Length: 596
Image (cartoon, rainbow, N blue to C red; front, side, top):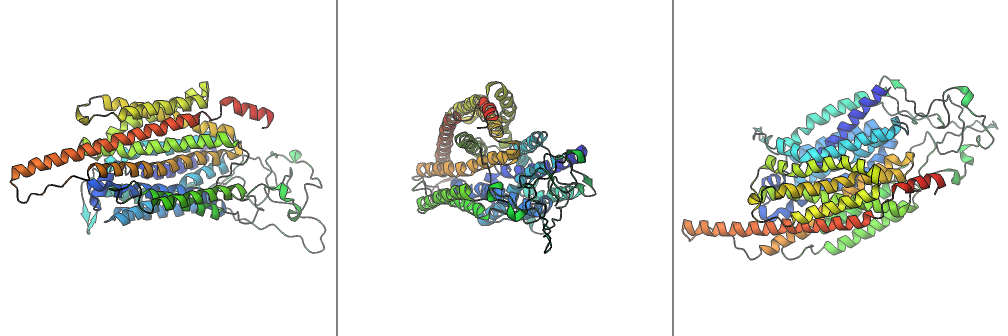
């Protein structure tokens, strides 16, 4: 059984890794993609939707499609998501213009965003409370590995020589997306062979007329301690021909208190044998359904979240930032997005079915922890997008060398993530999170002081990238541990998903906001520049004017990048202040002892 579960975990981890790789794969090839779809170097703001489109689909689809897997089964939803992911890859690879590449990336994001929560839910099905954190950690590691390897993975594949077959470009950055087709096919086969099919749920039998005996309740929400069906251990999962059977998905009730052996089954009481129609509303938890009936899905919450994020992203995107940071429609859409976000929060508080049900968790520490994850995500993606752009536009590096330049930051991030877990165990989550954000702020402050002559800066660039990576890496483990410590074992899966959702939302909103400001600065710095033309002047004069123009554009890019790093340092300072509200290690102990 353990071997079967490990195979399932490996397949699920591969699914998550594939989606995570493509979330970050374009950061080192963004300039090349922009050039191929007709976006000039001085209008890179038009390339922003290539990044934000994927993230928008990823974040908006993550909670809702995760719930759909509860209703229709894990395996069918994973297959559907892999098929849509492959479709998005094809659209992106064939893209000849901005609209198509953004559409392809958005489709990829919608499918990729669902794979993480479905895999986490699968772990909740197959693993008991004791072993579940280790399995969740493995899936989280696959997610983080994708973020670390994505830029390098993209840079390597982009080196594929240009190859045209039947008029279709297969080489260069197109390879990144064409290779997803065999990868998704292999992953789909692995999922089909390792995951069991969804069980067929039988409706609860209704008592015949005149039969005074009540039907044994079969809702998992009933507060009973007995079941009329055969009792099995709560963490048992039988191995069938299709793979291990999902726990707690069989039509009969399996009480968590029961263990193998009839002697452990308590005698039903009158309270236990009420019919399902007699169960009081107070006995049910939000979202519970009668076994055999379809599980409810929070469609309204999912739509409100997607609308809120979409309005905010569109409001922050300015295709012509020469005169203002925001477009004319920016403030109205941002206001509408905030209203939709408020509606989402209100709905989630009142709705009996929620996208992320964290009922019972302390509100202020929880929100503070998720806010730190949000701000960490914003700083992380700004680095992963604009450090490679700095390397390509100011240092003249190609895609792979730009990825290797970013690798200093990613290596420090990975090492520090492990170190953060060790330190948090000894010092507490709060202090390590605060220290990490302070170190990251120092690193970004140093990056904001990079000289115009980056090639002559020596090891200064390496030092600053390592400091920033060490700081952000320290935050990852304490944030996840704080949320898990504040939640019950039954909430570990949704709590872990909440941390990831918060970080991805930070990436989405952060890159949209910071890039909007940065591109406006670049356009304002270059507004008075005239592009030299080789007409009516001798070649030497033209070359001199061209060199002067290029130097001024480089200076404007340098100012843009360094000021964006300075803004990122401010984001980290705010994150350090918010991290002061992250719960300490002692708070969970007190909660367990007092029940509060």
